[in-house]
Length: 126
Image (spheres, rainbow, N blue to C red):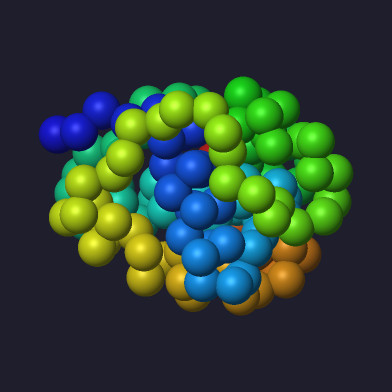
């Protein structure tokens, strides 16, 4: 098992989204990070990263990641982080990239609604 931080995974989400010409906002990033964690756990029965999510007004948030990308406000993140991060393995990217591709095209408020949908893992923890 690779040991990543939520920041490592966030850098991959941001970088791959920029490379695809589909940058995400911080709100989208937080929701995608959550859906990636859920999807990874469903397949591997272990967490991709150990950082905890907090219950914020618009759903799950990893506070440290939120703060790092908060300089963008509500705008799209159009620059890859300059800070060093651990690269994800090809097998982990293969598992989470389809989730990222599906979710980054959705509006932030659609992702918030999905995170709070009846029967969703987040809804069950509320």
